[in-house]
Amino acid sequence: MQIHFSPMRRDGRLTASVSGDVLTINGEAFDFGPITEGATLPQDAVSSEWLASDVERTGGEIVLTLICPHGANAPEATRFPQPVTVASGSVPIPAYEVAE
Image 1: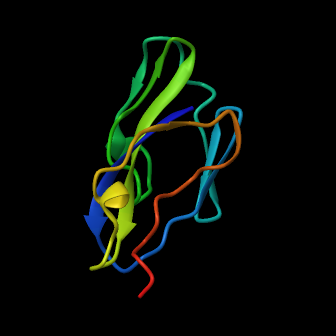
Image 2: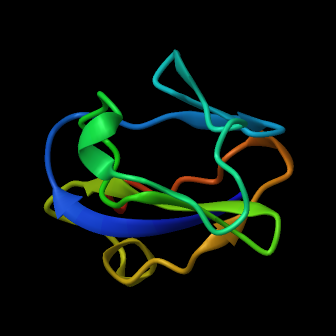
Image 3: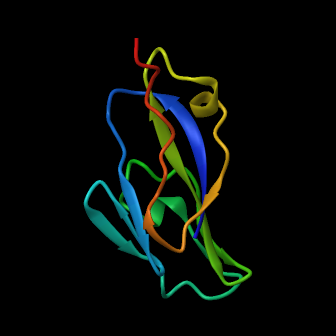
């Protein structure tokens, strides 16, 4: 699963994990397995405040964007996050803010 991030200043925290075509966001599982190659699931068809894009299957992989919450003292890597590819396990969410 290819996951892009859209940074946003907000108080809520994000946890996510992947198992095949299932993405679990803050404990809620979303099964994207039925999405066929080249198909798009509109963002508004998924009831998650953390999804920031449509969900597509391209090259056999699910591709989507999640909101990346951050605090007022977020590091540059969080404010300009790089996409990640996760086949199984925890999604590495950029740091919320720099510890003082």
